Image (cartoon, rainbow, N blue to C red; front, side, top):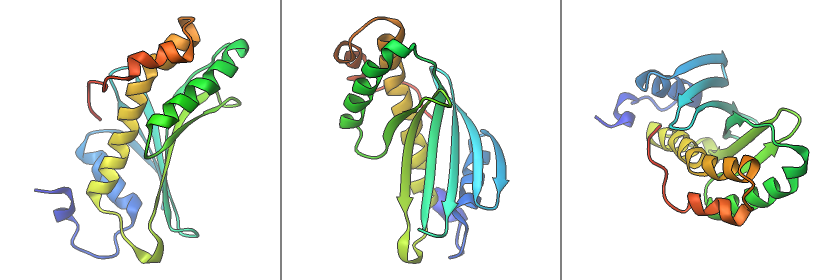
Length: 166
């Protein structure tokens, strides 16, 4: 049965859908409020923190997928260069580094203007794409930051698709 077959009503809140998806996958989650949910998704390299929040103001379902990282100060320039190369290969979503929080972040916003509804398949794909992207580039980030590789050299490990699944 497709995920969307469970939802026959028209007015299901996107965060309610996310909660059902998290339950179906047996992910740990915490419903922070009516419009926000946080969960932990196990990957091959690490566990990723994923937060989804609904903004009624601009009708956008926002997702951030994070993992902790504390690169040495002298590596930040190369890290930003690596992030640019990573983002050149990402067509949906983008990476950034939040230095103050020491987090590598993959962000995506699903715009649902005009009262559109997100399908469970869309949301599940959005979450899976975030984890797969993080999994794909995690080794490159580690090689560049801790393995003294250049961003271009580190990206060679990200050319192949990551194994595993969300």
